[in-house]
Amino acid sequence: MKAITVVPGDPGQVRVEEVQDAKPAQGELLVEGLLLGLCGTDADIVEEGYGWVPPGQQRLLLGHESLGSVRDAPPGSGFAPGDLVAGIVRRPDPVPCEPCAHGSWDFCSNGRYTERGIKELDGYGSQLWRIEPEYAIKLDPRLGDCGVLLEPASVLAKAWEQIDRFVTRAPLRPKTVLVTGAGPIGLLAALMGAQRALDVHVLDVNGDEPKAQLVKDLGATFHVGSLDDAEVTPELIVDTTGHGPLVFDLTGKVAPSGVICLTGIASDSRRTPVPLDESNKEMVLENTVMFGSVNANRRNFEQAAEALADADLRWLRRLITRKVPLSGFTPEFLHKRPEDVKVVVDLQA
Image (cartoon, rainbow, N blue to C red; front, side, top):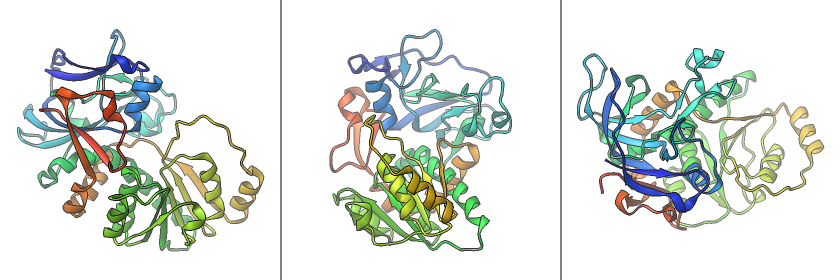
């Protein structure tokens, strides 16, 4: 079968090559890979050296945003041939630590977790892949290609689950959310905010289509420019940019007793002075919560599957703006064009 393999940190080593099918293990599903979503993590693996090859291997099979169709399923697995599925990314550490032992590997406390396509496990960027049933998520077949959005949606499902917990600390019902950044993560954050019947605002540095129209078609408000250009005082903020100076400015933007969720990580290592004392003062005096959220557990993947199934499929389809063939895959595909939202790889082309 064909697969995308890489050597982390060496863009010249990206290959589409014939690889041996993973050895079948008892009880695993055999899945025909349909689509593979690309994101900034993949670019960081290829170009910046983020990521770890599996022990004993020289190369990593890329890909963590998956979509496939079950080809073979063992009896009693809960799956059948033809089921549309996506794979969970993270696996618990072998010790395991207390969170991993309770199924919360997204809160792994010792860092010994593994991740498919990222950390010591081969990914989903192949024409066939195998997976344990407990790490596979069955999708509504109506989703079709949109099922490839499950992994990024799971990150937001976890973020919103945590936000929902934090807002219970004060007898205030949030009405407004500001999402900073209008990439795939930002748009999915906005979708889930709209599904909660919140007044959703999205801020981006530019007003390029189709992002602006996607936001408007959610019934949300699109703002372009700096934080000052978003003339709203939200009780909730979801940042998807990871831009350090902006993150600290958010403490002065959120309403009293507000919640700020950070989901982005910037690759830029430049140092920028920020008024930490002032930010600290604002957070203390206003009872502000700021927290980070990464990855997701099985419960969050299931929540994300429900959110996608409840969404307008015509809207979801517009998030996938470019489909590229596996046979012609190059590192260039890891970088979006101005009109791109989500780029996916057709694993059968």
